[in-house]
Amino acid sequence: MLEKEFDIVIIGSGSGGGVVASELSPMCRDGVRIAVLEWGPKLKPAEFTGREIEMVGRLYAEAGGFFTKDGDMTIAFGRAYGGSTVVYTGTSLKIAKETVEKWAVPGLEFDNMDRRAEKFFRENNLHLIEDSLINENNRLFVEGCRKLGYRTKRFPVNVKGCKGSSLCNLGCPHGAKQGTDQVQLPAAEKNGVLVVTNCKVEHLGNRECLAVVSEPGFGEPSAWAPGEYRIKAKIVVACGGAINTPALLIRSRLPAALPALGKFITLHPALILVGLHDRPIANFLGHPKSFCCDHFAGTHGFLLETCIYFPFTTAKSCIGFGAEHAELMAHMDRQQQIIALAWDQPLERNRVTVDRKGDPVLDYRASPLVLDALHRAQIEAARIFFASGAARVHAPAGRKFFVERSEAAEVEDLIPRSGMLPGKISLTSAHVMGGCRMGRDPETSVTDGWGRVHGVPWLYVADASLFPRCSEANPYLTIMALADRVAERVRSDTSELLR
Image 1 (tube, rainbow, N blue to C red):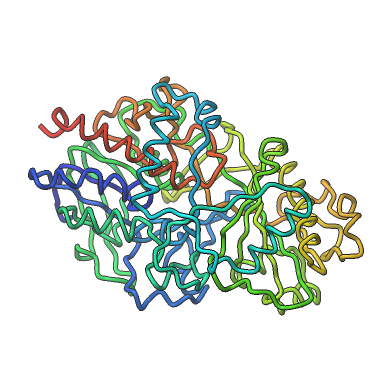
Image 2 (image 1 turned 45 degrees about the horizontal axis):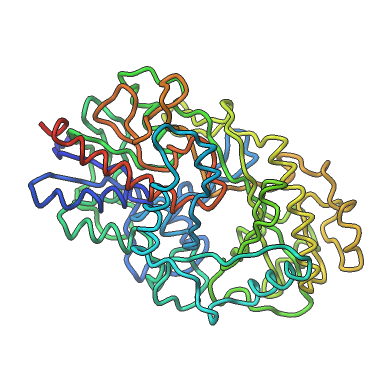
């Protein structure tokens, strides 16, 4: 086994790890040795081909097919230099004051979080997309909502030099999306941080990491040769995400009792919904996700967002077989799409565990409240589709594959709550939160309000697993704000921990 030694090791390079690396990197000038260990590859620019199956195999965990324990949901999260910031659309919303208050973490104040989020608004070039990049799929959504009196707002997105390829979820082929791969990680490396790709951390020991470096056959070569490594570190910051960070801590059997570890996982369970127009519409040009409708967030607990997904993802989200399914897929150029995201509740039963091989397992069941929200979301999305001119609508819980325009007044009956059966509807989520939740009590939380793991003074967490409950908005900006906060505490603790 090969030996390495650093002062600080950061596990993961996404919205949490990238920020921690960037914020701590000035310490390298004083001789502090910092490394980022990233499981995924760093692709070469020419390897961003935009081919769906190829790119999900290279950039997503389990090629985008990570399933919950019972197989009822798929979970999508990135595994690459830059983590999920490489494969999300760049849409970023600040967390609401009411949500921070629901979190009720001692010492965590909304004004402080808002200030930190504003910092990354500027640093990652967040702004409202130019009108020329708003495609017809987005304009039809706004038109339909306006006709129905539903409130909409534009997403801030983090792009610079966007060419309108609409390939955001497969990794931008133009490097326009300003994720941590484009902003924080290059800045950290410039200051002296070492980023090691293709490096999977298997276990944590007493101030050490056990990792394996592999060669996947694509992407830039890792900074280290393939093999097994023992990496000594005085400080470890776990930023592997809300699936992998809890699993890593569970596998490691830390010298502390952490009853809440892996528990209280929350998601934004989602349904991809499709309306079919009788003419081609511009949906795969421009930015894919420019607007959302939060009209029902307070009353029914869901958000509707514009989206456009690629053939494989769309096909598996549309429930059914045969001629009607084939017709829908044959007319991708006529599809209008909406994704519905439900607000989740923190339940102890929803948790990350590990199997006999040590691989993460997400044991999650959508609550009746989540299913209620997603049922209502299908009805309201159908109304938006029809108001914007769609000829037919596919709703996963529908009594039949298509609801016709002539049946628009009957959507309440044609999309019944009884159709919301796990295994029948194709649920997904890209926002996994919790598992190492912040709090004061070690019986009900894993870290304190600054991301320090209870009873393990050298170990910190800085990713979405810190969330005590769901963020009720796209979480990336909130992760960055929390990671900035954790990095501040790491800096203040170094005088003691780096002795």
